[in-house]
Image 1 (cartoon, rainbow, N blue to C red):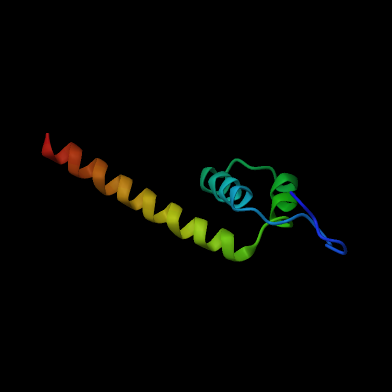
Image 2 (cartoon, rainbow, N blue to C red):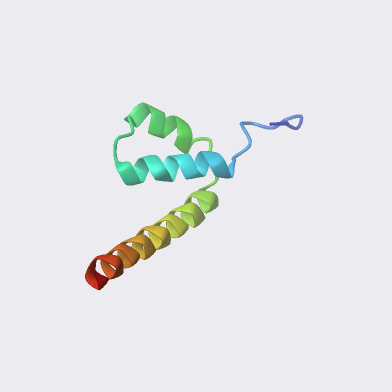
Length: 71
């Protein structure tokens, strides 16, 4: 990732946000790794990824229930 002169930290990436939210859904992340990732992400990215993740989870559960009930 390219940095500009005077850039204070790493560039926030969507992939890092996806990993942060995925680990949060599982609930098995160490606090130190969580704090490190949290300092390197854009909060807006985290919110968008979390909302999409919840929608996918709900859609998957609805699909699973419909599949089980249909049999």
